[in-house]
Image (cartoon, rainbow, N blue to C red; front, side, top):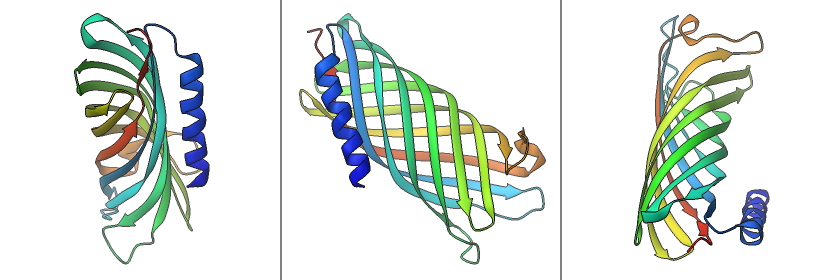
Length: 195
């Protein structure tokens, strides 16, 4: 936890030092809760709930009238709790790169994002499983102060490839069902020196 807090502080410091007029830089730190509905081709229900820490940053440009466009890089890790208590708990790590378009109005913010890359890795005593694909998300924020935003984000991934130590394969070769969605509550610091 101390490592993630240190990364967050460094991102904030860099934001203050290098943000320029018209530029938007926004580091964030949040808690993520997600659910995965997973059924293997062998008809084993491997559904689970994931929870953990998310952190990342957006960098982009704020246009007049509150519109903004940014690139976002996000990371996260946490624990996996299977729906079936007989199955082993696991851990996960994830990363994503997205394009985000948003609109700010006074104290309220709204944005849509498309994740051009979404990677999720599960690890337990039997090995590692990697999933990759894309995602889309919808976010809402409230700014109680000029440089702070409390955010709620809903994200839906679409995984198309997987591997467990070998070459990438289509998810349909291993899973008959693979659906998920996550909700993230975060605190961000949107810096904009263009106003």
